[in-house]
Amino acid sequence: MRPHSLYPRSDLVTILPSASGIHNLPKGEAKLPLRQAGLFAEDPLQRNILKARNLAKRISSPGGELTILDGLSLTVSEGETVAIRGVSGSGKSTLLGLLAGLDLPTSGSVEIDGKELYALDEDGRAALRARMVGFVFQSFQLLPAFTALENVMLPLELAAHSAPGSAATEILQRVGLGGRLQHTPAQLSGGEQQRVAIARAFAAEPKLLLADEPTGNLDTRTGEHIAELLFALNREKGTTLILVTHDQHLAHGCDRILALENGSLMATTSDGETAC
Image (cartoon, rainbow, N blue to C red):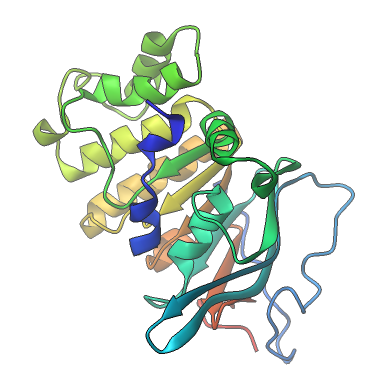
């Protein structure tokens, strides 16, 4: 199985954590896209895990060319947590897919840990994802015929982990599913399925975790538990987290909240409104 077959492009394109406060633009400043607001200056004291530069995505439509992303740039420091919010159809899913190298931009570049994604061919991008990137999807994306243990073992085996069974068991125990190792997804609740998905995402200890509406298919209480688990594991593993969410509570657990509007990223205030 090819490494990237775990993460179907269609799921990103069609829908698409220690907290330390939210970085906001000062009151009274003009509302500017982040790429113009000077919020991408290199910090010599911090190591950047992800850099997106001038990303644009345009597609042909019956009404002419449609611009989804318009010269967007983003820099994320190692260990940082970033939430991206926006209305349906604003391009969040497209952006997440481009950051993962699951889709190709019209123009622009993405670096993960200093490696230029689009200088690699499809197999090279898949290998980089298998080694460095974890995913949590709204729809869980568990393989229905596999047990919880097998679902978590699979990316470990693809990454040639020396003891995939032991590592998968350990992380499933950490998310509270030590008694569910041999259960298939159909035998698990929605919250349990998302716990398996989170365990799978963290099992190979990726440097970067991309989460697509991780609480979107869950009730409020279960979603809160999943959010707590996601941030707890992120703290423990020191992973960099970028998540797309409509969940205000989940977004406010991140270091930064960004809004995607008209193909560009904007900083937001602490109440989630676009800074102005």
